[in-house]
Image (cartoon, rainbow, N blue to C red; front, side):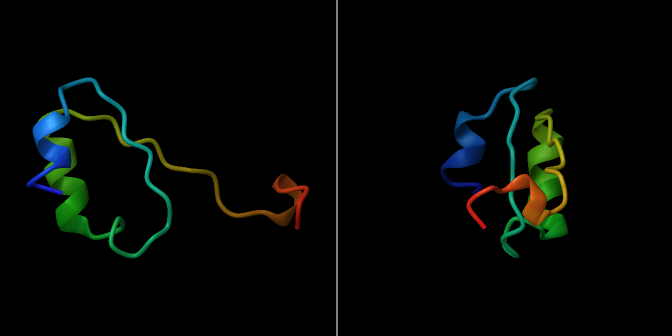
Length: 53
């Protein structure tokens, strides 16, 4: 994250993360937010939202 993604991010950018455990680490969120990036929370999982399932 700090070697690739953080170098490309600018204040005001938006990063959408899913529920992968690596993304949910507090340290990762703090580093991204320190740059000034917006982290919107995805909606909770719901099978009604996915017509394929």
